Image (cartoon, rainbow, N blue to C red; front, side, top):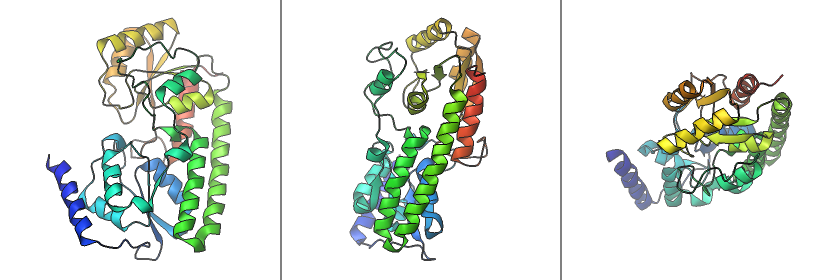
Length: 312
């Protein structure tokens, strides 16, 4: 309880002080705070040497469940720009409303977020396989846009525009960096598309609903075991449905995730005879990650999927 109350007390105290937020760090670079890793990575690529970037979610942490420390609220107050995704991390939304509403960039519009219903409609066709109340968050907005590199590129462009407003002298550099980053993401997107084009199985059975954008981009259908939160415990009827789906669609690989417990996927694998492989939702980079940055982890996911989806 103290962890929840203390940040609120700090926010109230800071609000009373009326401190003006500096726009630059001690070494004169623009101070940027990002809510979680993909946003931080994009901000660093766009900002280059002109910015310092701090990430609110610790490496390997679960961003859905973030609770802010007092020093992190101070970081938000001191930032020239805070990059976040609204309705994904309630603690961040509250802190921004109190201290940095005019210095924040909500990337939701640039990312062009989808609901789970829209993802099903765009997929290969079992959008009505789940019923209302089945724990799969129908109609909820899926935050995991960064698993589609083209959407992350659109967010990078939005970051460049806001950095140019905060630091007009760096506008040319920011836009050039964003163009270079977009080119890298375009290359990555083409690699993934080509690498998965020949997969004989187009059904992705995943631990939770994190790969909807990826599936929509590359022509797969996602069948998640649980909903948008990896902590959501699936019901027995949900598990029975996924077991049936695996058997009917000849799914040979079930994907666990780096930030979630593998126990449920292990149970399903035993029940169905499928093998388990691990995908990374790229919500953070840690010692357990397959690579040191976003492109590297995405390419590691590609290699895992080529094996798991039978891609000759």
